Structures are given as structure tokens and as C-alpha cells.
Image (cartoon, rainbow, N blue to C red; front, side, top):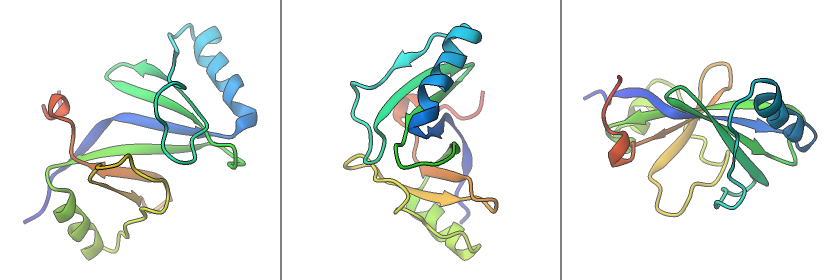
Length: 134
């Protein structure tokens, strides 16, 4: 049985330390968007600082990663069965790359990359996100 996949609600822009403040200022000061400082929240492993803005139904996260030399974009995919999804992806030559970034304790998810190297988290949605495409 093939698992179902659909786009999630989160996009992460991983930013080098030198670009973080300028990027936040662009969205806040130039575009006039409300930037939420997420620095007090627990951030996984290598993320030194985090903020976010709402882009319609999507949350765009800005993650400061001090050892990055360039910005990177990370996407979210929801699936109905994470283990089945991993088997399906492996059967199609897509390797799990959980070494990319640690998950919060207890999170059932995997990191993969698309053919051009864009990381995707594959996970079940939270119960309040389990409504399917709108």
C-alpha cells in the first residue's frame, strides 16, 4: 500500500549567523510583516536562534545556524504512516537522512532530500493539522 503525502504548514529558512538579522529586518521592516521571536522556545540541536512569520496558511521559520555558510530552505511533508512512508521512499531510492538535524524527543519523523538536495521532514501532522488540503 502506498502512503499518502501532502504539504505541511511549515517552511524553514536556515540562515547563517551573518544573514539572520538582515533577513528578519527585511520581512519586518521592509515588508511590514509581524515577526515572532521564537528564541525562548526549545530549538533543535544546531539552531541557535529562531523567529517566524505567517505566509498565509504557511509558517515561515527563520533558523539561525551558526556553522552555515549560505541560506538553505527546508520543507515539511505530512504522511499518514511515517514507517510505511520510509519504506516506500527507500524502495524508490530516497534515503532517510536523519543525521541532518535532531528531532524533539518522541517525534516520529524522518529527514529526506529531494533530487536537488532540498531537505524535507516527513511526519504525521498534529491532530489539529490533520484536516487535509484546504
